[in-house]
Length: 105
Picture (spheres, rainbow, N blue to C red):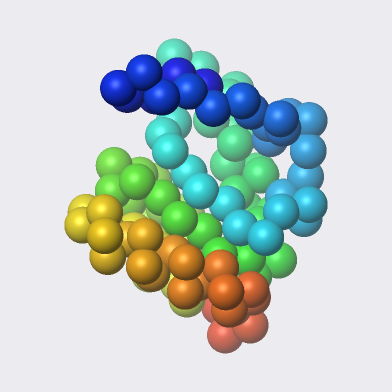
């Protein structure tokens, strides 16, 4: 995965080759602008993590999508424009591990 400033990460798993239950949390970077199939498969992965009460972090650009899917504003779902605040909140959410008070639909 190519990032900014020459940063790259090796993705060992994708939502197509793994299940969300294999991970402690999910961080959503963005949706595809070209593929509805990609978005649907990603949404299924996120929904599975949500229904297992796992922490979910997302870039602010995904807030509208999370609101439409009734995920935004739920306990353990972290969205913040301030990167320092976001990082702090997401680390705290991950350390809590599960959010049993979440309303799972």
